[in-house]
Length: 378
Image (cartoon, rainbow, N blue to C red):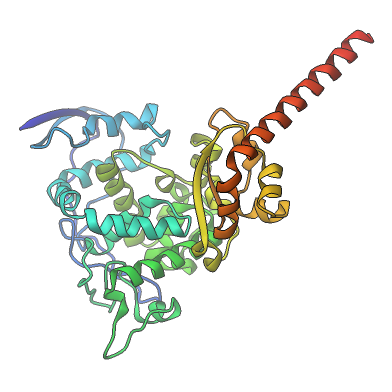
């Protein structure tokens, strides 16, 4: 057994409580089955307590390849490898959550591969973060047979009318909420719509559980769009739901991501290349019919647009902030184009790169010459 000792700063280890608030029966996804050590009895949120008196806790596992939890807590101060830092207000809850759910989460890790691969592929098609797959873990433990006491069904726990609104068949003979592929596409549409409304992934996770009306009500009452400021104006179940999502991602991903951060935190901590994909203004049909290629180098949008027979506004709609990101130190981009335009790009990519480099060099020479003239005239 591999033992990892981590130092937890807390005023005392708090045991789980049973102060679960029942679903409110809205027309969104609201309830979930007993998974991850009894979802109906969530762990107490101790974040308001003073952080004092170090407590030593030993976490053991039999797989040395698993994420070392000391790194998770280190990320609260110095950041994980992708730059996403765990918000201190989530720390005490996640400590309890990890302790109570370690074994179940490792079972998900070992058996969930095929489900995660399918979900990731669909989320990518819709330009959604792949880490949203962990929402299906806290909703249903990845089980297509999951049924809640209020009628939510399937891996994404869709309510009947919500599922129908998203294009699924739900009747006496057919329930496509249990179909992994179709329900995941429906959930992706829903998550995309929620992000377009709220622009913040933590608020999206909250709205997925409680509905947008409750989230907007919390925003209004708190005067803030920051989850950590408005959380206590949300139903307790929804507040806990968001933190479960964060904790599950840290355990299974080994780090946080854009989906564990508020919009402000993401803007501060992550580079532009981590955010531009969420600024694409594309319809579901355009996303499905588009192709993506990861590129790096001194490409220029105007040159790509000319070779692919696109106008500049259309290119920018598919690829926002392209020139800004390609001019930065992190000049890698997930280029997205309609399928026929991507074929044109692939057929001419080396000519496009060569011409782009020439234009950039000429611009630099012209700027240097202009500066030289200005200096010489003084």
